[in-house]
Length: 136
Image 1 (tube, rainbow, N blue to C red):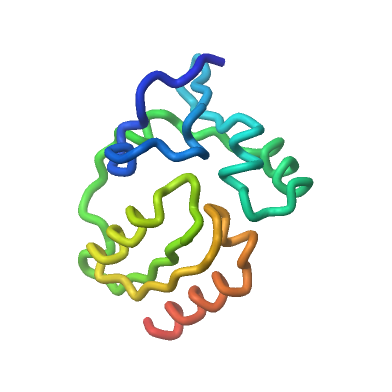
Image 2 (cartoon, rainbow, N blue to C red; image 1 turned 120 degrees about the vertical axis):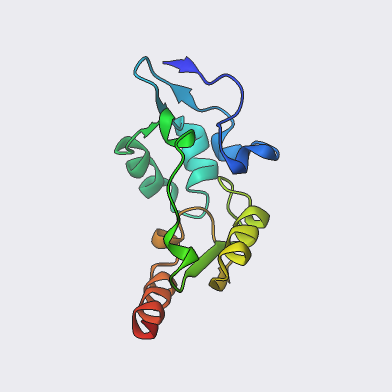
């Protein structure tokens, strides 16, 4: 694996690079991997370290091209949206998440959670999904 050069090509990269993504490894096929220390201590910061190491071991790589892809018209432009801001996220800056939610006009909740809120705050995430499902 080789070290990533520069910053990922995405809106989040316009700010300071986050601790969870500071040392991405890019393999020969262009897939990005979060190193174990960054995964356990930043990407999965509020997850039990043993569970975080298991999650690290089975992580799926992100295709580098994903951060450069341009999508069509996003669904949030024509459909109601819900957004969970992870207030302690070390992968996507919480202020960026708040901006995304505001731009979307999303019904928003904020949790004192790291990037993996669906693991560390599963019941809160389920409630948000249920709320969204009932609304539509």
